[in-house]
Image 1 (tube, helix red, strand yellow):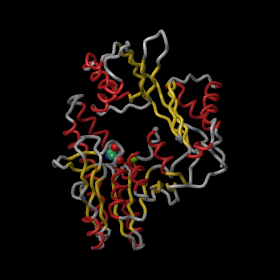
Image 2 (cartoon, helix red, strand yellow; image 1 turned 90 degrees about the vertical axis):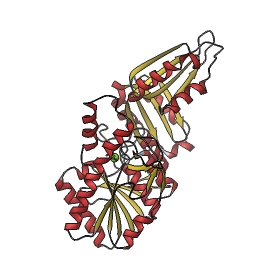
Image 3 (cartoon, helix red, strand yellow; image 1 turned 120 degrees about the vertical axis):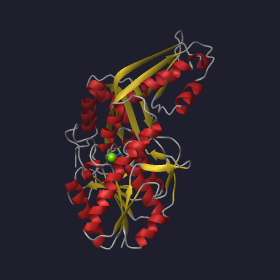
Image 4 (cartoon, protein in one colour; image 1 turned 180 degrees about the horizontal axis):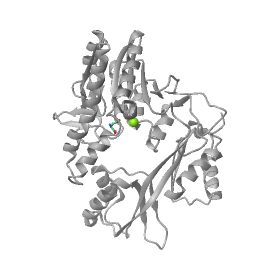
Length: 405
Ligand code: ASP
Ligand code: MG
């Protein structure tokens, strides 16, 4: 007998019929004698639809009220699924995030779980009940309803798995596993049987939408085996672990990409009466995620610092920087839109120099200009024109032999 967390994403619970299928799947696991906690997302596109309704009123709703609104989506799913399971004769109870004991920080719309006491869930499991928990939501210490950021139900699932000491956390979704790249855009993308936490963490941060990055972080920190599998078919999916065997000596294991990147460039005169740190502290204090940073100091030219952010943060970034221009002491800021980030990831890169060179070489053969670069031990990312993003992803997938099975 195992303790299992089963998480179902929005597409897996998108209709009453699909909720019925999920209920049967849960019932099947329960009948095998396992202890089951189910974490659910909002049905289908509910979260988008709710946000859309608010946007009909204003572009600028308070984040608090958006959390009040968006948190309702998951509650619809959890109760319908509980009603369904109960009517199948499986004793089930649903809990909101706060009822399940999920305590978050105070950052609305992108909060982090600070504490999760698994005791309450465990008590219900001991009473032989299936427990359903609403994903994506929690409550701050001040008693405010918060949400964990888009895609955050994955994080709820893994955090619960850690808190109750689950044997495995299964993420059921509309794809049957983690692929070498997004099969909708990269024609030879292939399903991976195994992947390391660190690789998945990079891929998730770099735009592979299949898992919420914070969920992978939790899984890594608490060593929770995490499996991504199809909610429609009985296949094995992809298992995430600490270390996996190197397949066919492949150095690169995945290609990720993300559109809607903006490059901001700030020019300053020397002596710079502000500091680079103060610019980035200001952005961080306003929760603007800065990604790649490149400083350029060339003799005879004004020094500049460029950094990439997501398009959705652009207006806020400009607003914040303009407001502090005087204090921060820069002279000029400019931005370029229509960019994308393409990355290669693989833990084998640590011991294989020359991977970046091979990547740049291929991109140059494809006539794709590289605007920014960033590297870590296990990844190389480039910023390229958005129009070249899919071409770059396909070329790199080919260059590093990822289609080979
Ligand atoms: N319903 C939320 C979203 O669409 C959370 C999730 O599904 O993970 O982002
Ligand atoms: Mg998701």
